[in-house]
Length: 336
Image (cartoon, rainbow, N blue to C red):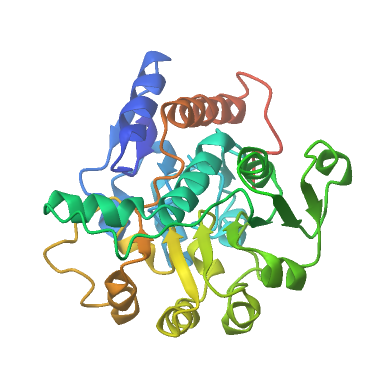
């Protein structure tokens, strides 16, 4: 019946992936609704592959629908794949592929931009001057060049972050379960250290680790207790890394200079949607977070650049071609 069923990503990827597949002669259908309801999944009946983004999640109980559909392949147009049930897919004989890497510089740049915004109170000044308020009493900034930045996780994105922030700060402290000791030598003012030292020493902390059992709520009450006073925290990795109630406690204690979360626990119902009418009524912790002036919440947009969209689109169609045997299959991209 068809080749690709796209669960509407609610961003430019829907258009670029659709055009790329159709340009290669494949038949494509885009879901009318954007959620992952049972009915929406059934819309992919007869299509070889289903494409989904990070704002969509297929539950283990929905794998039976995929089997009934005749789905053979799940195409994640993202690096993360925790939004589909790998073991259940494998048991059902359904393959899944992801985009292992796309424009790591895009996410690293966003992390650095948020550090700068919080350090320089750009977000506060913007709001105030729009109301003709040019008072600077509350706008004293932080200087970066005599500060330490801690980077948790030095994969492709973490490395890019270190490279970009190293020219702005005095020192970069890095932590990774598998340190790259050859690479670190290329950054004169960077060094690996243990997690406790990083937390205790850093004025800025940027998180770049995958979501694993070991990293779930990695930044918890104990971690916050070890951080310096007036620390800046940025998370562009996965929302579940930071324990929100512990963050709120640290903010209420005035421990934090500022926080930027491009990802946050429970984000899937919000990201890429306009929820302004209902607000955070169903999520009191997020409602509390949004009340803090020095907390920036954004909608998982760190990745969203021209280069990233292009690379995700190219790799998604390449994974499909590899599945069909029309080009070499990238085994690193296939999860199951």
